[in-house]
Amino acid sequence: MSALIHDQPNGNQAPPAGPRRTGISMAALRLMTTWLLAFGVFLSGFVISEPAPYELIMVAQIGLWFMLGLTISRTVAPLMVMLLVFNTSGLFSMLVMKDMSGAPMYFAISTFLALSAVFYAAVVENDYRRLNLIFRAWIIASIITALLGILGYFNAFPGAHVFTRYNRAMGAFQDPNVFGPYLVAPLLYLLYRLLTGSLLRAPLLLFGMMILAIGIFLSFSRAAWGLMVFGAVVLPIVMLLKERSTAFRLKILLISVGAAVLLVLALAIALQIPQIADLFSNRAKLVQDYDGARLGRFERHKIGFLMAMERPLGLGPMAFGKIYGEDEHNIWLKTLTTYGWVGAITYQIMIWTSLWLGFKYMLRERPWQPYLMIAWVLILGHAMIGNVIDTDHWRHFYLLLGMLWGCFALEHRYQRTGSLNP
Image (tube, rainbow, N blue to C red; front, side):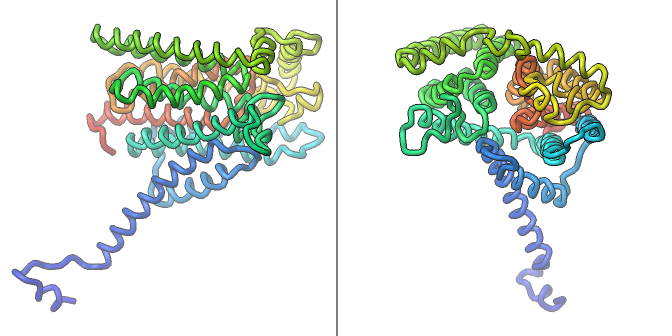
């Protein structure tokens, strides 16, 4: 080997082939894991059964990423601890269950989702540019699953009805109430790009927004409707607070109004179809019969909170639904009945800490600021709709939570080192 080295022209020494090949292999492996991350996010739009392909891919790549040296920083560690306490508290609820069928799988999925949030936070902190990749994969998945829901609603091809439930679009999901909210984050990302990008791209962005908005509308999920309206109003307000240029503020205002007018026109056109109009008039009621009736949703909330006050360990997963015939449909009650007092308190701390830190950092000019703003607006929105729906196993919620904490870690590192790079 020594002779070969010294025989190089001009006395230059060739680097050893082994380390070079190793470096190339590691670079290729890291590139593969990056695209595997995008593929995992893409699969989050196709959850027809549990465990879904999303879980299988994500479990494999979480292990692979950490084997390749992905680390958890001091900023992300509190999120991991809170999620660990939350899920450990839930495991203790099984001690009071008479029928534990389904409980181990439920907590296995809960634990996986907790790990996924920590994983997303760690990969975002490792390189903030992955936020763009994550959202691009999310947009592709959401448009495909939205189109499946739309085509299914109109029974556009044989067997299309599998993408609907109760005459409501649900795409490649198990429930329209999860399908609708899943589409909101990509819609807000496209809205942000519309407000800040070139007008030449506006038609394409508006077309994507229209598909997602129609998918959300045809889900006939009041929670999804509320989340979309809330996000579409609050995000431009936050952007107006951030931008100091009068011209830019005027642009945001005009485009926001224009986009709102287009969405209203699309809604008006859709309501010309009797099937849509009838279901919309029924679903648009603020309080449905099953909400305010005796032992309806709101009555069950009251009963459930009173019952939970007597059960420190909770009731266990799905136990409430077996007693009253319907699930909690309230995330705050769900945390009490399924994860016990300790779990419910931990969940509250996690949500309000996330919102406080997000509010503190989101107006600072950073490369990751758009993603932080969108994640913060939607975490707040999910906390609000959580009063009437259970968001416990919503995969996209944990994705948003992980991105939010990843941005917190980026901000802390920037304050400490003054560098945007790892």
